[in-house]
Length: 214
Image 1 (cartoon, rainbow, N blue to C red):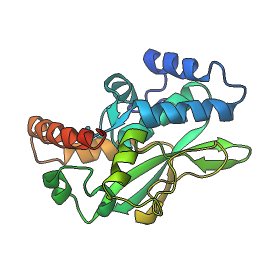
Image 2: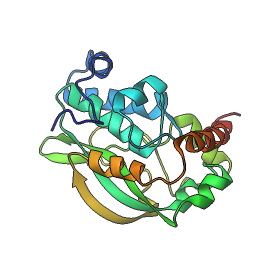
Image 3: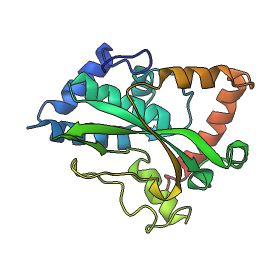
């Protein structure tokens, strides 16, 4: 599958960025690695609405798991690399200390839908979760919100599965070519006005950003 409403891989900004990232790649694996590191580190982990397009995330350079996986898949698809979503549910302890206290307390004990990207290479699907940017990951370890034994690496070689949040996964819902309907429906069920959600996100994102500072 290529373009969807939210995974707008045919967007000109998406195509231009994807082509730039893949330009010097000798093979699809190298292009996928370049895209992975761009999404991992250049798109800072932060709260945003789940029903925004990949092109929006590319412009803001901010996003949580939904936004980052959506952009990663859009970029891969834009250069003809098959990619899909893996949807799981996680224990919210993964996010303790990363979100502000108010946002964290508002989360259910088991949070979802929580997606990450998989891409297709040499006859198999490979997980490539570009969740936490490097600066945030180092801050999280430094402050003890997660242990190195839980997340031994956030680096990816293009050949082996990288599932950053594996210790916190409690349910696997399977693989999906598109999750637009789910995210749009979730956005419709939010009872808090969007402007108030923006304020809460902004406050929490300032907290998250403070973890990146030495």
